[in-house]
Length: 333
Ligand code: AHG
Ligand code: MN
Ligand code: MN
Image 1 (spheres, helix red, strand yellow):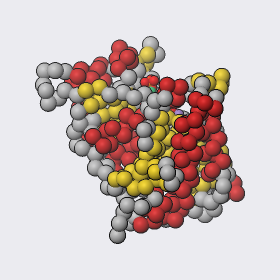
Image 2 (tube, helix red, strand yellow):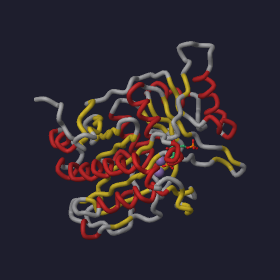
Image 3 (cartoon, helix red, strand yellow):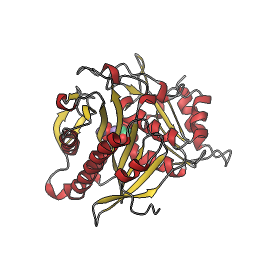
């Protein structure tokens, strides 16, 4: 059977060994795919339609909100509100979860998302992403998200969209990682790569190195090691796009490591920048499903249980060898 014309929905309906019924996941992937196509279209014309720039407000994270953050968040809320099977939405851009009572059934799901990842790139035509994760809601749950605050290993599907020269949709539902590229002429994502395996070792690292002096010594040692010229085999090049989705995508395909260490402040240590539920944990599932790794510097990301929906974590993610090196050098000790 040819794989050439497989859309994400047809692809997931053929998969075996999924963590939730394929039909439910297909319905969710259908919404992600439509959101991605709408966002991709909006991004191509945003400069001319006045959609670039800031709204003038800050979000729950204390970050300045871009018009595109708000627009994409509203779009995703609208699309998942359409009906079964998603009854809870958690987003970087919303302080509280959205509870869609009409969609709550015996089997229903929460979708957790970062509508626009890499917002600093919107106004300079840089790469952007959308990150998403899907978790089951417990039977007879109420509006509170207590049953969603579990380890990332509980995720049933996760992935991201990368808005670069091509728009790519990458997902895993526990049976490997697949990538689809948007054919704009017909408006469909079509399978590009199936069962992606991340190289065990790569030649690049991605980090905001301007924060070097604020890191723990272990994280500095890691970057010193990766950038050292003493051992040609250990030497990596630096590639940093400022969008986690874009930087992770390079790791997925070519190996290497993306990191966002915590910073040592006068009051002690901060907890990093990236958010566990809709940035770190979904990408950790993709990484592990591609035989890569994701760690907070000490422990496997997918085993950590967040206490709050917007909890942050330090993150070291990518090739198994580089992530092991980060732990060995005590990046967060
Ligand atoms: P977001 O735009 O969703 O807030 O995420 C930005 C994240 C991530 O995409 C990126 O790797 C990192 O923040 C960039 O942060 P710095 O500007 O501190 O490097
Ligand atoms: Mn983000
Ligand atoms: Mn964002």
